[in-house]
Image (cartoon, rainbow, N blue to C red; front, side):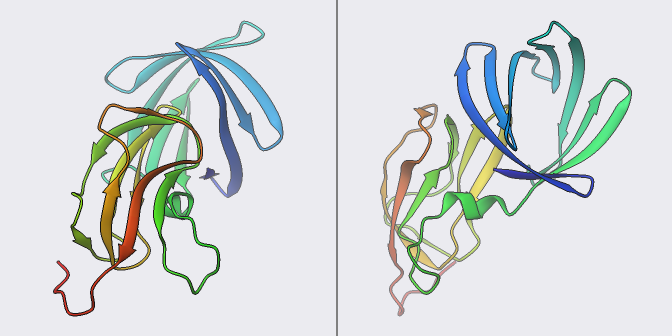
Length: 174
């Protein structure tokens, strides 16, 4: 996923997660961290070389922007166009046919039901990855054909989560 910190864009990928041990890739640099989260957004981070940091992560109301405080520094972090990562389209003029996760994580909440018609830009699922929750949205008006996961499921990277179909034109979409 891409994030914006200040005026810099960073590419972040979760390489591996085992209990509190997390390996992430930021741009082309690998970091091995031991992260312990508290429920109130506070966490303790120990780096591979033994440095220890306390951090606080505060999500905005939309869960796409965060205020991160570490070592007396505060940063505004924004997830860049998050739903582009939840959509697979072969060509720009083709309709979206599935929602997928670009990285391993956990299904927090499914916001739709099979057979439901949803409007373009509507969130359909919330996934937690790298200790952040992201809403995955659909790009087009569509029909939810099949939900492939359950709330609480651990998911793999590039795993399909929801199959979508074309919304019937005569339906009123809410």
